[in-house]
Length: 178
Image (cartoon, rainbow, N blue to C red):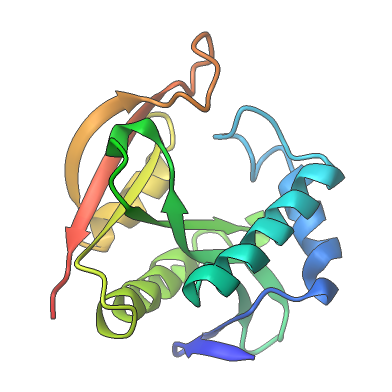
């Protein structure tokens, strides 16, 4: 089912038929270079189930992104309820993206994320949305900046091993523009 549409993309519910492409994307070391490690098949299946559970609970989560011209699954973009300690028990919604590498540098992450922010503020009634990534992940930080998100602070991500170069993260936020 189509949830959101942009000029070049369709954002829709993640389906079981997307699993092979999702698993392959999550096992790609280039795609996962800013994560502690690529996901195993079991981890991708847990991610898929977590997305399904979040859709049931909130009506939204990460969506499958499909290129209109090819109708190909190109990745995930969407909203996720974060449980990081940095939010101190406050309900915080994060926007995130992960695209197959053959679709990088096409502006797709920004295009899809902008549609997600519009949904977050107009339809989901959220007042603010966060995004965070490793300090090393400059491409994602660039997307955050293109979305007019504001830098909040740097922090240590407790979900990443402390001895990892990915441990230090940066946090951005955008407030509703409606």
